[in-house]
Picture 1 (tube, rainbow, N blue to C red):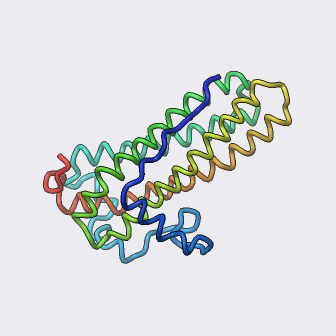
Picture 2: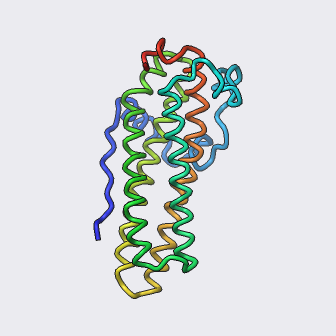
Length: 221
């Protein structure tokens, strides 16, 4: 059995600043936290109002990089749904334990590695471009990078829980397998639900910036 792993997150200067700002309020509930928010603040959505989602695909400034980026987001959504379906089939007895382990481990490793790399590229290359281009949305990008850090913590929890599950699958202890499956399902759900919210909010901030200026003007292509 090959253990799952994920690379360490390389923090940006903004990440360090956000960590310092969070420490005094560590025990306060943030309404914009991934577990609590449903929408972004209306004052951040002035560009989305000018460039609503139903106009994106037909807009002349929707360039190849933006299309690729949106497809990547859809890929993460679809891959997450695949992992959910696979776990459900295993829990319902439709997939034998050893077959599940052989399918689940590689699929989850690919998903987590690609998600980590995607966020690193955004943090270190694309977010600085957008923050410079639209300074009125700096708080929004601070939130998105804070999301990335929180999501990475959940990725690490998923890796630990998944490795425990994969280990239990090598045994014949059905109770231990059941407990490990339940524990993995809980941390996986936290990751995937938070990711779903994050992807949608990220698109609502970034795509309108691109449509308002074009990829070339922003230096993206």
